[in-house]
Amino acid sequence: MTDQQISLEVAYALPDRQALLQVVVEQGATVEQAIKASGILKRFADIDLQTSKVGIWNRACKLADQPRNGDRIEIYRPLIADPKEARRRRAEKAKDEGRADKVTGGRPNPQKKTD
Image 1 (cartoon, rainbow, N blue to C red):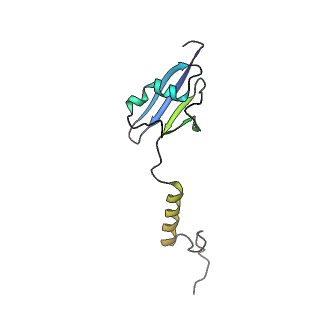
Image 2 (tube, helix red, strand yellow):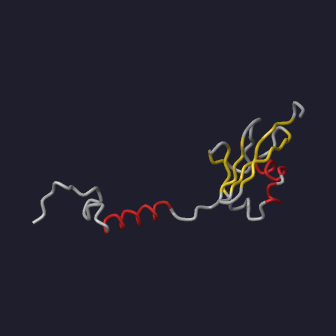
Image 3 (spheres, one colour):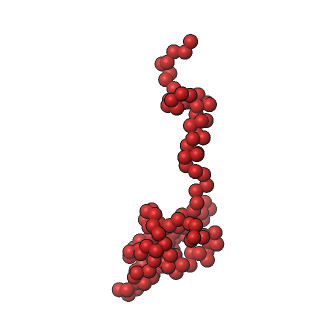
């Protein structure tokens, strides 16, 4: 590695396997160039850089951003479920099962007298 190069890691994970690859690129290279140089796109055919979100050290970034020496570039998979929708379904289930107050959505008051 020369003074004009930086060392990076490129990470991608599936439920059953993962990859953390080291790559050396020219200083000033973009996130997209580093991902392509790592060879990870050949190992995981399901990665589509046009739709996949990417980040550096768990912070979202753009493909045109320039990483620094020692950074870890992460390629994120799309979410399986919308977090807001999943939370709404859990809350409805808790109300139906009596674990939550049907009006407020909070925990039921065990001291509350019902006649």
